[in-house]
Length: 409
Image (cartoon, rainbow, N blue to C red; front, top):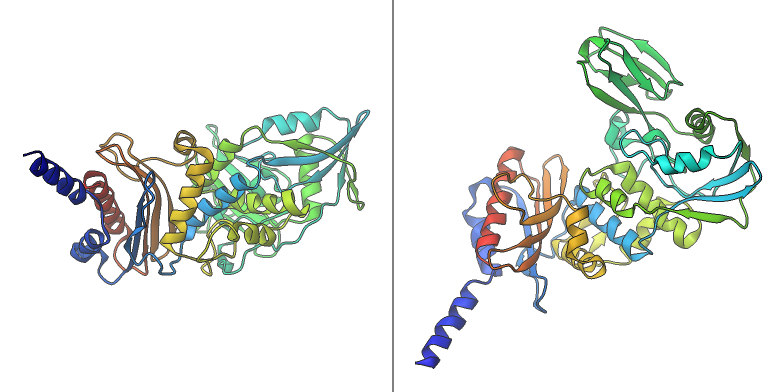
């Protein structure tokens, strides 16, 4: 009798496990995915088992799933983000950049850094070692006017964007207020910048009270120093010599920065952290060198930026699984819950999934961690490329799979 009971229990336990065949059957039965390239990888995190799924070794366009790799890189290479290099004597502060992106940022302002810089009467800005382009390979050239494609720079300030806010009195407040602004009631966009100059035009009639709109400005070292003077309210002197024998001010808010990357999917912050990784190891602010360091942590990836804006990026679901597992091993599940957004678009269930989306036109992905009804933790990567269906239907299919995995594993 005991043998029969044990056999039934063993069979039931096997049946409850997710498998490649089950995943392939689920894909084949979901009509919303017809015509798409679908790759799904799943792995139970506390078992030394192989990854199961469908097309787990297929190269896919990851979009913002790349940010998972960037955060892994930052955690792996020290999990400490240097904010600024400095050398203080008397009332003078010598500084050099690290690529840190939150100085006077309109969304994620680092007031402690500003307070530190404002303590000194005189500021000297020393040239840092840099090696990067303003835009990444494969970025869309005509997206220069959108917040999500703010230019990369050696010392981002104000998020490398101007912010336009309509106040209760009807005025439009611009920050920073250093650029030429023209009001044009005929233009079709709320705010538009010239392609080659920092000249902006705004249509106030398209703003409603409370609207906050961003538009990137063209960066340069001269512009950075001017904006630094604007932010600090004091003269900043440029020095062509590199700063020597400096101290490093490190951030005590790394999870706040990781959340900005993973929860809000901020591209400039992610690109800047990739450059910051390079600085930590090479003393050079370089997205390309940071990306090479990130690539060395994973297999089966072709990486060209730190945010996922590039359509040249290619990863496999298997490589994403590996990166997610590494993050879990390095920081644990409690910290993962703090830095990853939860529950995708699902509204009516208790928290059970934490993951990162990645979206470019005709491509949508979702990768992360999931707790099943049996309280098992799984890592997953769902990548759906080249679809022509409505995005809402693709998202609906992903929700269906998440609930399927939750209930059947």
